Length: 322
Image (cartoon, rainbow, N blue to C red; front, side):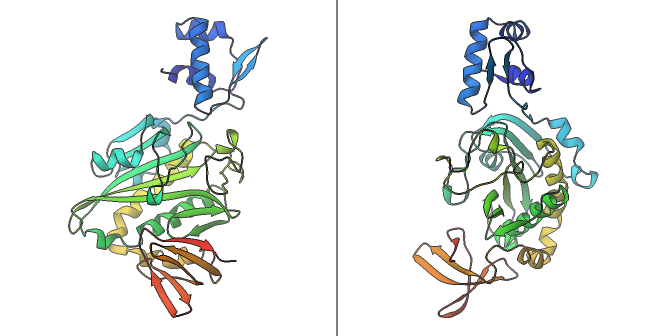
């Protein structure tokens, strides 16, 4: 059932009577009620008042393609190919990995099969977070992509600094933390020729207004989390998306030449658990040590009982050992 028009009316946060909604949508009041029930199933809380009607308290910040593009700096907008702004998609990453061209961008209000690293589900409630993917073509194969996810993490943290959200820590290899809770993550996937021209999709997920519909400890999320609203962000998701694209696209253009070396010191300055005990969860077991930093390819440097070792690979997770 299409609820797009209903959402556009209720996005202002004001009360609208059932009769008024029916007239504007050209449907019966019973049909209006069914659509309102759909919103509740999408974790969009609708407040009902017998005297005043229905509203989404505080309104809802809907994505808008033209508003996003108006927030993208010219040096970045020239690199954008097709721009998809969707109501719903299984996964923005999957969509652009399977089809699209260089510089294509996809954002969505909701993902039905969003995922994080190692195939974990990424909870993607409607209209509350930023789900953004950019498709980029590299010519050096996967060898030229070492450290890319860490570099993107640096860029996101710096964008959030500019928007007034400080204290962002980076957890190897792809998480953003704030107040020791997960704020967002990065998922990079590769297709095409892994030794030559390859297709890369860079997926970014940032929690923006999730506290409006969830509470910390919700069983649908397996770890402590926070969102930008809790950290003081009062801007729009359109503004946030435009700011991210403004730094991400030029950086992707230059990454083949600069590599991760240009980001290493900046990443280490935000490194979560730096010089602290950690436990690494490996495919073959676990390993304890002291986190020393990263090397010029983005590998994790750890002082273990056997001496300093460097770890890399998508199947490794890091936990605080404190």
